[in-house]
Amino acid sequence: KAGVTQTPRYLIKTRGQQVTLSCSPISGHRSVSWYQQTPGQGLQFLFEYFSETQRNKGNFPGRFSGRQFSNSRSEMNVSTLELGDSALYLCASSLEPPGSSYNSPLHFGNGTRLTVT
Amino acid sequence: DAKTTQPTSMDCAEGRAANLPCNHSTISGNEYVYWYRQIHSQGPQYIIHGLKNNETNEMASLIITEDRKSSTLILPHATLRDTAVYYCIVRDSGTYKYIFGTGTRLKVLA
Image 1 (cartoon, one colour):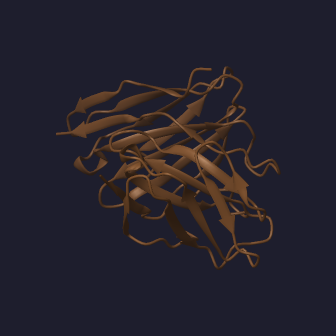
Image 2 (cartoon, rainbow over the protein chains, first blue to last red):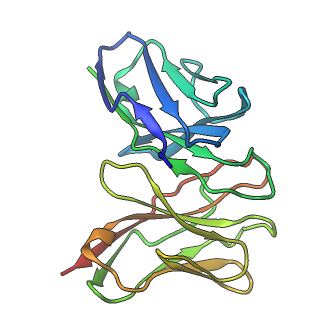
């Protein structure tokens, strides 16, 4: 079974531009979440989607947004890029929705490394 | 804030067991403990999770204390490829968020 796939793997953008990152979850997984990883802040939760609905959101400004499609694939968008947005963006999928009693673990992709210059 | 605390770093000799501790003193009765590891430039890799019973899989064993306030991840025969940052996580039962702490940087020495 293929793992979580994130594209592109690397991205270089200029301050003020916007960027869209893509994530394809493991087949059959309907929950997708996004994380930002930086050396200073570590892994920080961005948002989580299930059945095309945002179920959870972290403490990030409105420039960060996401969506999920009917096939469970997800995209996240960052508008008006700032230098501080340079990070590894990780997508994770899981079998069960938030709050499920089954507690399925997250399975992560290898991320998109975004550099803002 | 993360609900777990872990040592910043540990060393382990190759071939020996690596025992990674984690404290989660505020854990609630229905919250699971998850372990992940991250090798440089890759996404975190799921290792194991448990509620209150000890768990074992092909990668590791998880020992959870009876009061559930701490746990230990055991890699029975550490190899150089086990060098990574290991994260112990308790998923918040109210928000359902996984909050990552700073993890333990394990270095396996030849």
